[in-house]
Length: 273
Image 1 (tube, rainbow, N blue to C red):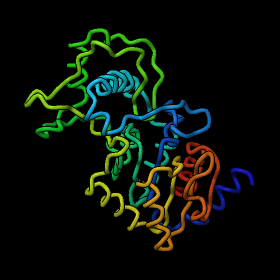
Image 2 (cartoon, rainbow, N blue to C red; image 1 turned 30 degrees about the vertical axis):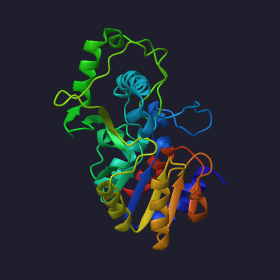
Image 3 (tube, rainbow, N blue to C red; image 1 turned 45 degrees about the horizontal axis):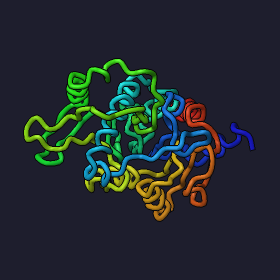
Image 4 (cartoon, rainbow, N blue to C red; image 1 turned 90 degrees about the vertical axis):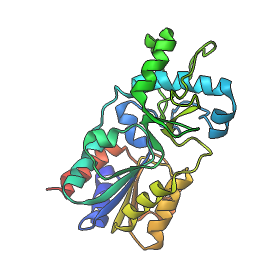
């Protein structure tokens, strides 16, 4: 079945319904950010919250890699898929958007009701006293204390904004200027729970929807699978766009094995005319 036929089948399901959207890493590949699990994606071992909190050497490695990745991350731009979803929201077609990505590209594309399920790269929080800092403020401190980080060589970006640095020995990591505690970027690490309030906000978007659209997620992470199951229990039709199989395929009314940018652009042109 060709792409245009798949799109037509999906539009039959979506047209006339308000749609709740879930997006994953495949959404941002056309912006130059790789997917963890897509074909050809680099083999990576993401930082766990246990390692970050309990191992100073691993925390130092994380901060170096995360900083180098963040500098590249901030230069990425929304792609046609992000812009299509923003256009659908402006047209009143979406109940909102839940994303598993931390890149902030949906907000930069103009989407407004966005739940960043796994956090974002914009802020940093002290684990001891709760003080909050902007990521750019912490980045300035990191470069001031470690001038070598201000002129890094080209790096290979990861989907969470992290890279694998060649060396992190001797690097001074930032601590809280209020209490000296450990600072952690506002992202949900592997092994860490999504905050309850954020989960409820995501569920509200799906509960208000008359159809669910999944774009660029293999649904390998439970936080995404639960939202699909929630929609399925209500009998809400589900459309999935993803290159390769997902854990939600058996629940999908339509599965489109294709890229998100061209498919979402086709949806937006059809549903906003």
